[in-house]
Image 1 (cartoon, rainbow, N blue to C red):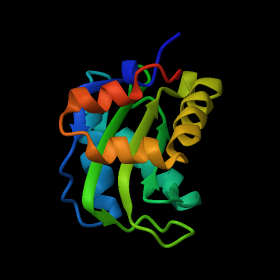
Image 2: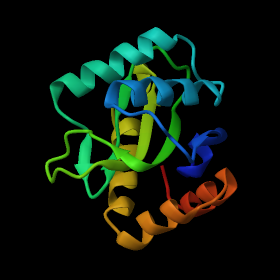
Image 3: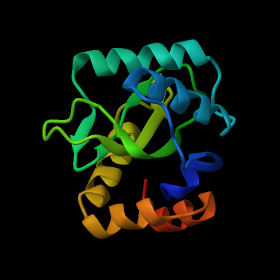
Length: 153
């Protein structure tokens, strides 16, 4: 079974995100998906992620946001991760700024169970303060991937 780390290429990790708002961050995250080799149509993925945000925020609180898009803009499931020291206003229910942002991108054909499995797996781990702290203190993409190793997708 694939792990979360398997879906996250080292080039899809930004440890010093400086985008100041949600829209800029979404664009950066989509570009990070491009580093995975899974991106087929940038504009299609951007549109899907923005449409999902229009339905309701993917800011979970506790400094976490997990935007996602289900579309033919990617040819396989992929993740991007960005960390922002200053945080991004994601409209989280608790008012916290997002310091840890994961973008989930899945092809439309795999949108059902696979998308939900990835989202649930990330969310289950991100509620743990120790897990978030390890992501916040990781200094290299390899260390981020190591934190995510063993977490089933």
